[in-house]
Length: 397
Image (cartoon, rainbow, N blue to C red; front, side, top):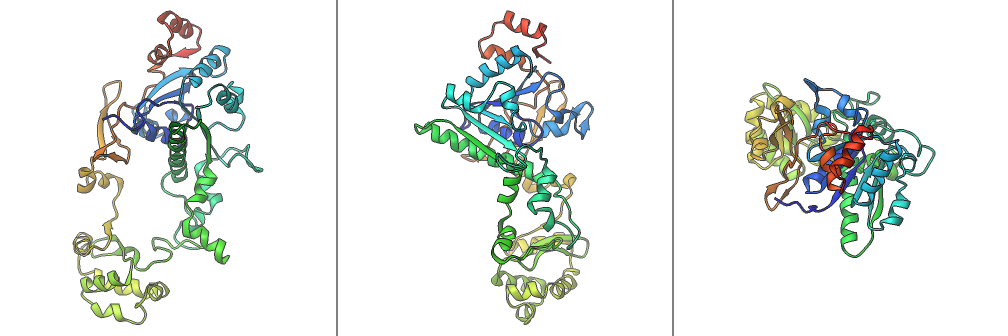
């Protein structure tokens, strides 16, 4: 299918995760993504584990749909080439530290003075202003400083990081949203825009009721393990053979759930009548529930509870996730092939248009594998490209 961003060219100067995740989403939507990498090693995640033989699975997981050109960022010829590419693009995505874009001859204000409809998207660690504006930031630092880690863990005083780089991921999503919004404004007769976010801003933006609790009451929340901080029963409970997640959202569901458990009178127990009562008496409620849940397996309970319309599900390990019938029905895993012919299953993007999932239009690229094709697309002759290769300005796989 032709994606909604077909015809849009994105110059991707980003590396690591937040920026590449953003541009992978834009690739899913049909944009042409030109990933510009350093001639000496490329995106740093190419050297990050886990590996399959020489292939970084970290890199491959977030660089679908892109073409790669390897270029010397700090040579005069390389910077001249970068400027030309920038001015022929619709969008630039970067996550350099503050000032690097100017060092590369890509000052965003000057670029937009020459090309007013250009969209420049920047992702930083801590934002454009403030005492940390020049500081480097990484996902777990943002998790820590935003309060996210303070509510993640088994109990008060013991804090855990999230199991994936969640702040990099949501920063990439927010950046993609900002870019699409800027492109929409441009298509309606406006100009381009400078779009920026940061890991810290993104982390704070997803604080939801936990952050609001502090703002409104002054009370700082603490970790509640696998229990929902506000709703009960909503968390992990033990069945006869293992755990499952049960999420009872209201009093009506609570009454239904007690019927399913075989003890309807539990719904009228004064300790558990309302949601507030259930949360206040959470330990006693969990004990009563697990006494009853011990009568069946997790799968048996999942089927019974789900049939009643109450959210429930097993806790999968990742080696179980991709065998799940629902995941298979969604066709979330796409079988692709690397440039060297080896098999590479990839998780596709999460969107569908007109009931069709967004496709993976290109495998994650080998460093510089598209250098010649990209430069030819910008109008360079074979002879001119050969000169740049010979001079070490660009490289090809």
